[in-house]
Length: 254
Length: 266
Image (cartoon, rainbow over all chains, first blue to last red; front, top):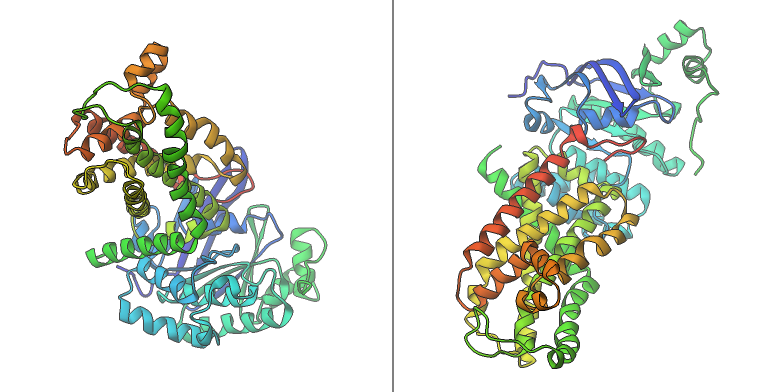
């Protein structure tokens, strides 16, 4: 059973190694329901590895992963049911239509047919994609494909939404739109959000920022607090100090 | 996780496999043309060189074309298993395998569903091929069409599970050509698909022994006997046993604890 008041995500001492290379070292992180946490880290910091562990694709070498009060190691299927995931790579079937892709997902998730049809329409409408429902994914541009994936992740009403660099490769207006959308979605539904990125401008004032560097959590707090702690003028400077390298890009080139 | 969820997920996976198959017309055509070329061109030349004596399950002298039909049915299923394996490697690279593996159902069930859906696709190909072969005048007992149905399920599962096991071992599409050389060709040529074992034994006893041990031979024999309304227990036992081993191996290798590699994610 899902526990409504349990933390949406609870990581305790999560460690992972690829052979001899340590990718994550004792990462502990707790995310409350409705909270948005930005996992900020340079490329190679371990963000994708952490995501693969949270969604059960990798098993941690040590540590505990709790999703909505469930132990991912022992109650894998129940814990997975509480997750909505947008992977960094695109994961849609290009030759199938938007509707076919989303129906397939609903089937995997055990959402009854009529309910699935209703939710698909609602989620697509929210992302202004309803009229594209019967188009082949191959015919959609990158921004629209990403919207479909975000809609898909929300279909099963997840307790926590995992976003792994969701705006990579998109043009600036699309990025802005999706960033704003994802921030409001978390607030409206009480869905917790764990959002991995290396782009500073995806952070909103109220978000908690967790800086991941070389597999460890280097800092955690609101943008303001991180600036205070590091004595930096802005989040980009604070991030640069924490990861001891040049400031991250603000926006991707279109 | 209710029974409806399990069944619905299977239906969803099967529907996706079928849709993808239907949308790839070239795949369907090549699946059909490949065995037909063997049947029409290769068999015609080979017939002259090869004399067949009466062996079970045949009760009389048969044409060479009739002999190789079960082998070509096996070939369709073998290629389909490899094709599914190829598409799984592609899915891993493209990421859609993650969508499947993060579904809230046991991993073995998800893999079994994918496997079974692949078998359904292979059976579709087999039936189209057999009907076309009959139109070409190949003498296949019409009732055999029905009898072979239960045989095609274990053979398809076994060959699909082999493909799945390979997919877990091959992480990149570029490595797939090696599979053709080292898996498909030996499995096919060192089997009873094209020539009976006794014929092979005349040429080389070691190769004949390999033919005897090759699980693909047993898949072909299971289909061959079924076409004539007979059940080959040994063939069934080998097919079921190796199929189970391949499948357990595939589930084991898709275990998250084993699915990592430096710098890449599964």
